Image 1 (cartoon, rainbow, N blue to C red):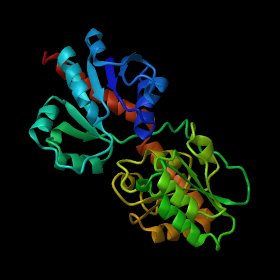
Image 2 (image 1 turned 30 degrees about the vertical axis):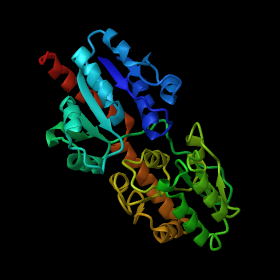
Image 3 (image 1 turned 180 degrees about the vertical axis):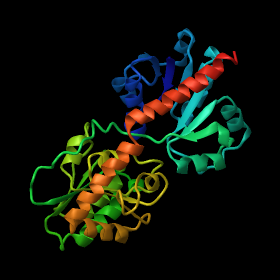
Image 4 (image 1 turned 180 degrees about the horizontal axis):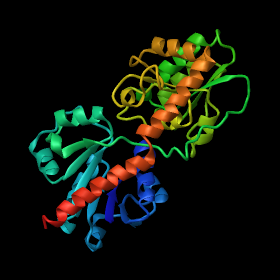
Length: 339
């Protein structure tokens, strides 16, 4: 197929990592990438690059245009008008703002299908956007289970707890540090390691003032897998993740995981079976869950094994790409008869 993928983000987060992984997985097809020059997407994604919309007209017999940010939707509509391709849009964030105004009705009237990364996002979009149920479906994000393997950590005698996300208030590191501080005296072998780029310097300074000598920050990591392989427990204390791709990565490594029960994370973890869910923003709930896992190695092993099985069956990359290609073929075929 001839596919145009559009993502003009300058960031380097979960959306951009997913986008580049998707583009690189479509090497059997002819893929063009419209992105910002010098961005993480530009550096990491294969495919033929377009740095402006002017080059779209030159793509021969384009079949699919796939937009990954609502800010880029107008570019997808332009590409569709120039090429008569089918237009798909993946919503990675959700929306809690009412957008049924004339402008959004115009924009979404040109979109053939919208993909939500979780059922929580799907419900938000049905409420806030001018979309009918038949124009919207869920396609969970996924990880390559062969890439994120379960490996034995280096034996150190300590219990290492980890969290990987941008350092900012919405990611909940403050509650995690509070929970760890509450248990630190009872578990001298426990350590907490935070990974992620500092996005809010004031918030980071607050964390620095709170943390003791057994809490460390290792910064942004180009490859998260070695970090995960050194952990015994993974925690995702984010406030309202649309999905939670980093949680899936940790689960694929066979780690027992703790997360807030909210939006996308409650679709990933089956509470008590493939991980532990606690109430949102509840540092006491995090503290209780940490005590359970630190004190019970058998429970850690059981939850970790079930977490790996959960990702293999529900959130594996091969299944994700297969389902996406089925959608491409369905809508690309329909557009042939609309022209």
